[in-house]
Image (cartoon, rainbow, N blue to C red):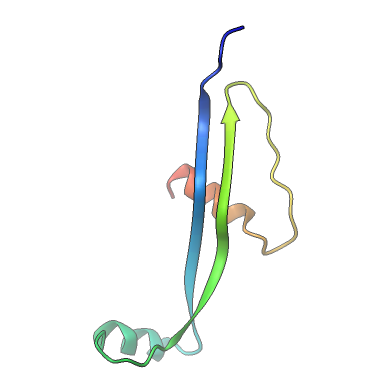
Length: 79
């Protein structure tokens, strides 16, 4: 039997966003990078996601709102 090469292979993909309480906090952190104070909170949208999809396979990504489905698809598409 012939081995089918994967079309999409994702190995330990993670994505983190910085969440700011106020718009001015983003500006402070950008223009004062050497200050020890951080003005953001880290939000982990994806953590260590791995999967392999082979040619001809049908795949569905199912999850609750805010679970990272769109974020994963954006990473796969390179957006």
